[in-house]
Length: 313
Image (tube, rainbow, N blue to C red; front, side, top):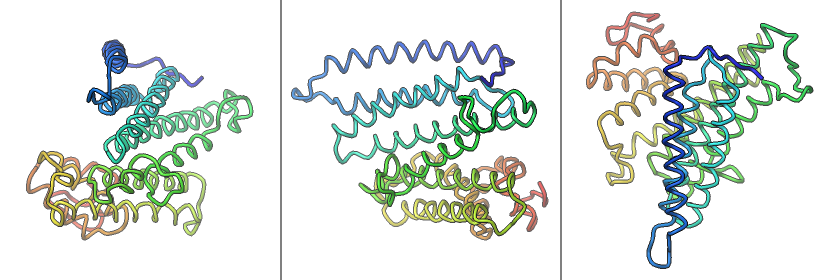
């Protein structure tokens, strides 16, 4: 196992308390579902949906404790287990609520969490192999999965939930087949494309010095598709002003615009990224600090002074 027990004791205590509350909630959901009678009008699909979202939230809490400098294999295993339980409940919710996209969107979010945990494990395993090459078998023949296999699994998970043309779409991709302009599904799919681009780019930078390699081209393609999907999401509230495409709170609108700007910059559309960020800064001046520190916006900072942030941050 790759394990680092030097975690913040307060964080461990908070996670333990959260898991106790999650366990109580899951017991309540199980009881509610057992007593549910859909023939009498009870919303079984809604119960299963909430139960699945609860498991996804549990996985998210656990995943948030994992990082580059902290790795706990037991926590990671519990997070992946919570994701699997979320998938099972959300799939059942989708079966009962035919045509309802919300369960599919929640499935996509859970799959993003699973991918994040797999990437964290792959990064930790790769770092361990580089630091202590005798401690782990990088090929995975000793029983542990290799970092390359983990990265591939993480990428495949995102591909299936983000591409509506996938032969067996899930998550955001399935939601977009049902409603091609569903905002949450569009944003979720866009983020998956961006995350895939970053994974491919990082792998390319690590393994290759050839700028024309297929990995470099693939990362650019992922970024371009993420930005294209964000453009559709941004146009939605203007072209289709109804409840399905309204981002809601102002903070949600700003977050979507900021993330879209990052996607635009990664895709090479610096003009669009700058316009979006100018709009965000007008509404929230504190965003300047985030812009100065965000690696996704490096190309924009290097090009010119933007919104009072000097080139290079």
